[in-house]
Length: 388
Ligand SMILES: Cc1ncc(COP(=O)(O)O)c(C=O)c1O
Image 1 (cartoon, rainbow, N blue to C red):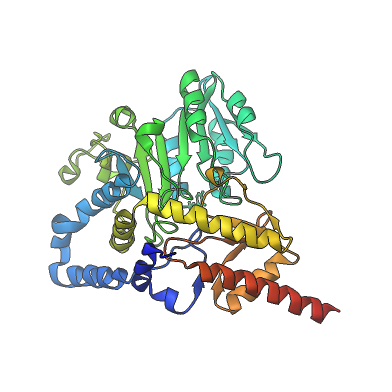
Image 2 (cartoon, helix red, strand yellow):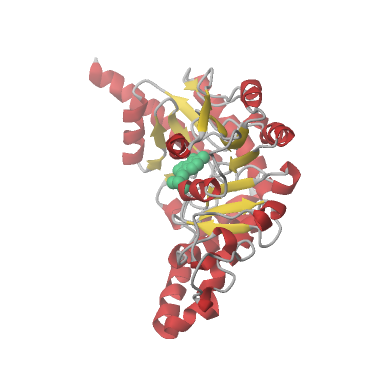
């Protein structure tokens, strides 16, 4: 079978030297980033302060639109930030937790940083309700939906769970939240770039994530989509001059908010990271999420079959429709196995309660999956010999 997506391999230098199966953590760097960084340095060196008006000021919104195009967000509805944790703080700062509607419902399968942030909001009056997983893989949707009630203000949940790749039923969660007057903060970090996301179809309120994993955009760029009707009226209390209607007026007194996306930003943007994000976003747009998803489903099926053939525990849903791009494989001494794989230039990672996470992306070959599995088998065999 020919795999048309493999023609993009030459654009990712690290694929020449490693078996790169870790796009759930850090996507491979596109070759174009060298030029983007050079362009950044040249602009700074030659245009100096004029770079702001000629390019840098607009870049935060332009990159937001590039990301937005991948999730069917209208232009101007996506702002860019440093990371998802900061984004939670910006969203939280739009709300008041002193009233009766102050409940925050989330799942213990969320990414921990998001959990730490919301747990800390108890000090600001939030009543935080955690819904626990039964099996360490899935989120109990019915219990989550039941917990979202008339006193719920916000529901921060991951679209795809980082540990297990389980796909949350975002539509049902958003529908239930809207029925009772709550808002959902959907974290699409582990979905956008590998699983289709359509914020308009979902009627999402807030959607956030970052570009460094499946979008091959490098560290330093998080994104926040705010539904346009909300975007016009919300007033983030974490704010600053970039969010001002007239930033260069340097007005004294309270802020007069700009329209989105600048409304949700605050201080000087992270220009180098925004420049680095461009090439990856361009490639993902060109390849197309649907083609990426089809290939991902096929390759995760293959990985699971190989793992099960060896009798290894797979902590990832078997149904491809309920699974994102990662396969978590639990093995004897899986953390040590992971370290050994990395020594052998097979780049994967390990997470507690998950095991070794393998995440093929559009640029991976089927042979690379076979190589990784064969290496695990070899490592386990060698370890067994050593410990005898
Ligand atoms: C689902 C999810 N959310 C958030 C993060 C990271 O959050 P932050 O951008 O604040 O570092 C990750 C992984 O790093 C993740 O997998």
